[in-house]
Image 1 (cartoon, rainbow, N blue to C red):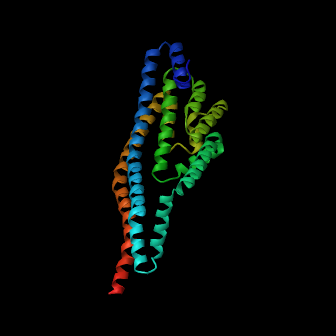
Image 2: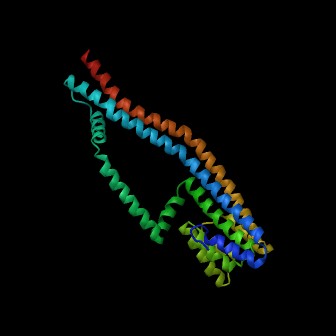
Image 3: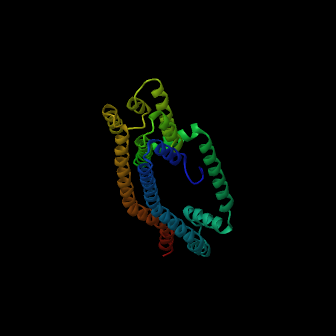
Length: 284
């Protein structure tokens, strides 16, 4: 097996298909799951692309005003031999910093600190869990991230169970394939609970990461012997919910970011022109 090209999930799915004689069916399920993951990732990227472009445009317009327009008004105040207002002096200092390139070492230090933090979070499970707890606590965005992670867990586990793999064999693979640290801990806790004789739904409910709808469907699957099928249904429901939420956020962000862009430019313009109008009125 080539670990760079094929994940452990793919290897385990193929092995289960060879053992059960359903390799063709398993490959179809694996391809469908990978397509769903790729489609969800693309929609998430598309939802974040527009805000990133607008933010870059906002910063570019602000930098252009600070480096070209603001110094002109500073010279005007100097020619009138009047002290510039405090806000204008702050803007002039910011523009001078941009022109001189002093922001480059500051940005490099910030980027270095962010890189160190990211490496620490990736290598430290406690830090990763704390960061995810903070992320899941954000309104709207946190709910989307939690549902996306729960959908991935449900789809992976449901797919492996549908391949004929036992629950005890499937859980370690799902834990390793799960990107979320908190959900990985919940899967590991589920494994310990199963060894102690507990069922799936109480262990999932004890983690606090899965909502009542998720737990109730799994409980129904346990009672009817269709846990794998229920997991796939939950995954599909959550994925559709995440897609709808991402579309709503993208629609709501467009006017919001335009207002933010106008507000930044308007604030800079007001800081320049309002004191100037007052100065001209006092001269008259």
